Amino acid sequence: MIYVKTQAGQQALKERHGALTPRQRPAFILFDGKRTAQQVLEATAAMGVTAQDVQSMVEQGLLEPLGAPAPAPAGSASTADAAPDSVSPNGFKSSGDRYQDAYRIATELTSGLGLRGLPLTLAVEAAGGYRELQALAPRIRAAVGEAKFARLEQALNG
Image: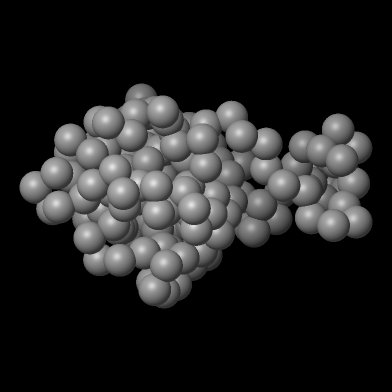
């Protein structure tokens, strides 16, 4: 099974609150929508992470199976009615929108580095805004290379 982080899970990681144990944090970071639960468990076995830990994260709403529909907030329009991006009348995205797009890409790129990229992944997860993420961009570029970094650069500057 392939899992992805939920919005609540990303918030728990960023705020470092008790929902994630210190043992679960590295495994949680590796759930990027590409690795199977088995691959994450194998990568974190030396840290003592078990299938029970993964199940606990799912039950707490921190992880969800890939492709699971995201719950819509009460009273919100359906996703079909929503605009794809918040774009100002002059055609530019706000820094908040650019941050959200870039955060998703940066997390994908750094988690793709595996355990050797864990410190950088943690730095991305800790970035609380556009400027902090932009400050990490040179480190991400150096770690993933120009070709992969191009997507992130477009999101940051788009």
